[in-house]
Image (cartoon, rainbow, N blue to C red):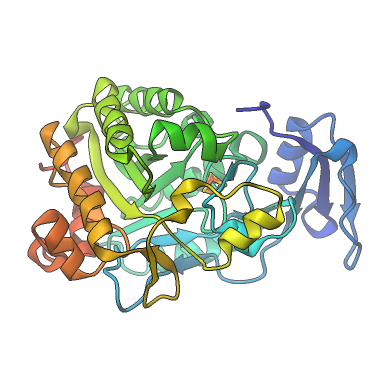
Length: 368
Ligand code: SF4
């Protein structure tokens, strides 16, 4: 990572949340930042020295949302808690580039309202199991050393053992462990990619080695972990590169340490290449392949190429003894069958299958 607390040089706090624990923690974590308390309608201040601003505010809407899927693809039943917006890292394929035009980071400090909403949903029927994550529009842990958002959330979730929280990140931050959660209720999780993609296309993220070392530390502390290959990119030599990452996983982890692994071929909004070029960036070669527009309106590789990618990854992982917790992200039954030899219905439905692997009642190991 480029800097321990990113390049945040301004902290803007809405007056309504200025005394919340999160705002107090952020001030303490960013002692050098220029702090402004904003009255309603005040403009956000410019961050000095070409840095970024972190805006601490209240979120006025719903916090819990279903993961965006379409009726054409198999949905994994994941729900996302909205904790903030934008990311201090910079991946060329990131969908946030389409949503946010400036570099301001936002964190939502009205956690009491969030917990009231979550308590109503999770507490309605304690026998109903949930699989949730944080950060629909953000990395789950990038701001954790500053906001302590996840530590607060884990404290709340201690009273809701029917909920498993997945923490998906490209950092190696483990400060959330200070909340001392029950390892059965948290799935620390990392996005992985080919070494050449991590090096050239994932600016300011933790190295693959750092991500996998963090995963190993979690396993040693009793957690199972999840891994995500998303996006899998197509470029010359992609098999060799992705094989290297798959092999590296098992230098750090055993198959039973992993609750599940997702596979998703690169897809993007059609305007993403234009956005990158408008920033003066060279188009990455993986964006220059043979694409089509999917039923969700996104650009994606032609189906035979996606099947080749997914099948290759599945076989390489199976060679290391991992197969039962594998799933495809945003693919049809036809692609599932061609790549993995089975469709979600063969697993009893994807959402139910992942829920059972996530919850793993009565043990520290999935039933693989
Ligand atoms: S780490 Fe995730 S949220 Fe952040 S820029 Fe990369 S893809 Fe986007």
